[in-house]
Image (tube, rainbow, N blue to C red; front, side, top):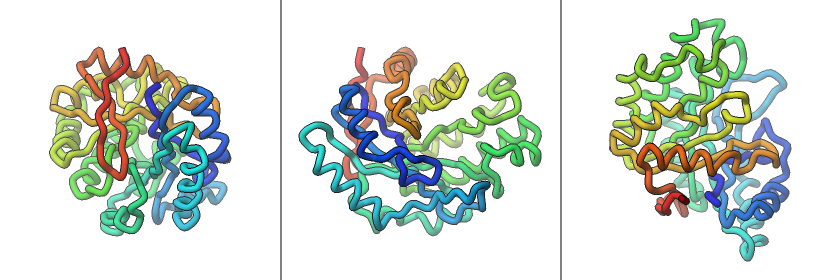
Length: 271
């Protein structure tokens, strides 16, 4: 089974799943490897409920290292993070991984734009839908142009989860120029993207990114591709990975990627 490379535990401010239970669930599903990637959004704006997305690295790394050793005979646990990056934190985070050489994998994600998380209605109170989407993609472009301390970009069209009509009025061709610029930067810097199936259990009919965007990434020469469920619970680990892998293969991808100490390992997509 393709390993899940986007998972959250109680170390993330929006999750209560004990990491050991998540690992046990992955083993029961037949995964031979997985990578836990808890949230780290440095200096993020205040959120309802006082949610804190600053990851406690002092305790996170030892806890994950201990679990990796405990379950070494059953599963290969990789240690990752989901680095939430804003233009104003790029300089602070640019050499983050040098302080944590134990990290196997870093997802770079955009969760906040102009001080707003699109998860909350306030974002689309500032922007009408299409402008809100464009502003989100502009922020990604600024990030990938200036930030290099990551391996794959996460849920590239995350914004579509929360728009007023979600993807009903979305056409990738309307943003073609900016997607081309984003992928040019990602590919030239040796980075990749993920297929994130979190949208599928949130009521959408496609995994992130939308198939038109994923095809563009492939056609521009993109090869690095991980799979992540974005699960915050035990139910959704590895959600619809077989279908997602088939989708990737149909677009011409031949491999998926795992990471160890930030180095990519390419494995054939299951057929």
